[in-house]
Structures are given as structure tokens and as C-alpha cells.
Length: 204
Image (cartoon, rainbow, N blue to C red; front, side, top):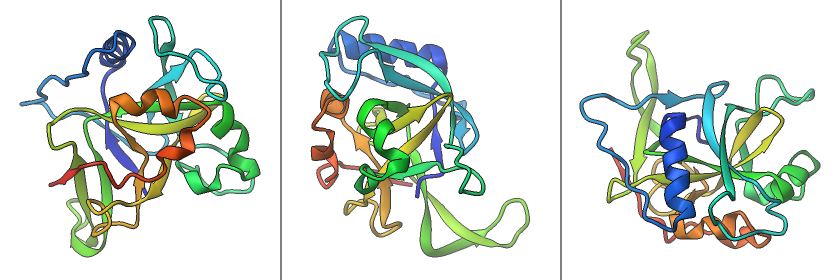
């Protein structure tokens, strides 16, 4: 389950929106020497939301997308803590049904992290063994578009079955989208994207 990814600033996210709406390739500026900040559950994250109902879809033309800062993790009375991941296979369940149908969105991430199922490393804080965090990036250094859903002032990262790049580390992965797949994600036939076997990722 994804509980950490690196993020852009709100201004950078607005620049990404402009590129997407103009059908221009999104290219990230090198982040050396500074390291990009990471988002964790309960972080406030810039998220791209459609200004139309994804249940019906619309062309990604100028003025079709907006950006807002949302808190990562849904709050539910029956759950302790926050729900920061939502399985695409659970789209029909009552908890997710409305958001999956009408409030799909995405976050722009230079990378995301998964904890290794079996390998451990000493914690930099306590020295105790923790699961080794593995960072995944696009091979060309470009952005990853992470499919999400939102409600109120909160969002959750949608996950699916891990592909061959992620499966050796973890059985699940975020809904990683290519730029050309964003119209499908923000349209009525989004579940066609559940199979992420064609997404190439590199780990560090």
C-alpha cells in the first residue's frame, strides 16, 4: 500500500495543468540539489481535479482542470485513523461508490515509495529493523500521475494489483497513469485502466 510519494508545489502543479490542457508533454525540472518533499497520510497535497463530472467525461481542454490542496486520507467513523488507499476493485462498495463515480482526480508525483515485504533496514531514527522503503520512478525521469479520489477536503490514492516492476517489493501499487491515459481516467470507462502491466518503473 502506498503511504508516501514525492510531490510538486501548487505552482508547479498549475504549470502541469497548463501543459496537459494544451496537449503538451509534461517535463519535470531537475530537483538537484534540493530533494522534493514527501507526502504522507494526513499531509496536505496539491491535487488536480476535473471541473466536470468524470461519470460523463469531457475533453481536457483549457479550463477543464483545477488544482487544490487536499489532505491525504479519508476519515470514516468505523475506521481508526485515516483511509489513505482505495482499491479499484472496491469501486462498487458504499464507502467508495460516489467518489469513484463522480470525484476522480490525480496527483502529480516524481516518485512513490513501497515498503519491501521481507527486506529490512535499520531505522534512521531508532536503529530498529524496519521494512526497506523502495522508491519507484519513471525510467525517463518524467512525472507519475497517481489516480486518486476525493471528497470534501480529503483524498485517497487508488491502488491496483502490482505489475512486474513492483510485485517483487509489494503486491499492490498506486494507479500510475501515463499522460495520454488521463482522459480515460477522468471518464466513465476508467476501470479499463486497472491493469497496469504496461507501466514501466525503475526502483532505487
